[in-house]
Length: 492
Image (cartoon, rainbow, N blue to C red; front, side, top):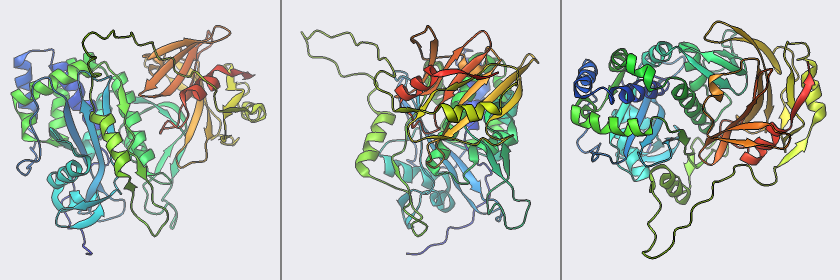
C-alpha cells in the first residue's frame, strides 16, 4: 500500500529540548512555592493552547508513582513547503523518584513501524497523519508502556527558552559546517558553522547544533540532543527557575502545547513532586537499539524486538532491587570503581606532537594524551580547525585561553576530544559523580551517564582539562580514564 502523508499546518520546532529548560525547571521551582504558586503556574499555562487528544491516549498516574512524558517536535524541512510537517524529535522522558536519575530515550525518526490505517511507514509520518494523538498511540504500541503526558514544542519556544536562561555552555565534539550559499552545495541541509570546543551556545546557534543531521545518523543526533539537555539542566538549576518561574511558564504556554491534564492543579502537583525528587539527579541516556539502513535502497531504521524489550526495561524497569527472602543476610554492595581493568588504548605520541605544533605559544600549558583509543586518529592538523586555540569569556567577563583537540573512531558521528582552558571553574566540571586519584597524585573528576563516563577531567594551577567521550559514549570508562591519566605537556 502506497500512501502520501497529508499536509498539516506547521507546528515549527526542530527539537523538543526547550521543554526541560522550561517546564521541568519551572516545575521544580514551583513545587517549593505552595499551592497558590501552583495555581498561578497553571493559570500561566492556561494562556496557551491545549492538545486535542483522542480518548485513552494518555493515562493518569498515581501520586508518587513514576511518570512517562512524550516530547514531540514537528519538522518543517529545509527548502520545502510550510505545510510539510513531520515529527522531527520523538523523545521519552521517564521521571521516577526512586531511580538514579531522569531517564531519556530518543526514538529514531526513520524507524519502521506499522501505523494504524496507514500501514508500514517511518514513525515520523504518524505526526503528519494524526498529530500527537496518533504518534503517541504508535509509540505506546512500539514500547508497550503507558504515556502520562504529551508536550509538543515549536521553533520559537526553543529560541526563547535558551536565550532566557542565558544560553548554554556546551562541549562541542567537532566542527559542524554546512554552507548552502553556492548552488548545488549542501544539498537540502540547513546552514551551520560551529567550531569544536567548549563554548556558549545561544538561540539559533544552539538550535542548529541539536537539529544537525548532515552526515549523521538519527542515533548520533538523538545523543547530541540528550547531551545538550544534560548540560543545560546542570547550569540552570531550581534556584534560578524559582525566581523566573512565571516568565518561563509564559514562554512555555506561548510556544508549546501540552495535554489538558498538565493544565490542572491536581495533575501538576503529581508531576511537581517527581521533578522535585529527581531535580538533583543526573540525566541518564537509554540508547535505542537501532539497526541502521544497509544502503540507499533501504530507507528504514529497524530494531530487534528482544533488544527493544531490554532497552524499555532500562527506561522504565524496577527502581528498587527485589527484596531478599526473610532470614537472608543482605550484603552491603561494594562501591563500583569505574574504569578498572585493561584499557583498549595504543600509544600515539607522534600524533600528539603534530597537534601540539599548532598550539605552541597559546598562553597555557598544552596537555595531550600519550595514548589514544585503539583504532582512532587525530583530526588534522589543519590550522584554524583542528586543533583549535581560542578565547573564552566567563560570566564574570574575564577572558580565558582554551584549546580543543579532536579525534575520531571513524564511525558516523564518533568524535571524542581533549579540552584545556585557563578557566578554573567551568560549569562542565562543577558536579562530578565520582572522583579517582591515580598514580602520581592526579585527582580525576568522573562524570557518569549510566554505565559509562561522559567526561573525565582534572584541575591544575594553570587551568582545567578534560577528555570528552563520543556523543554515543563509544569509549569504555577504563579507556576514558587511561587517556585522561596520560595527559602530559607537549607544548607551551
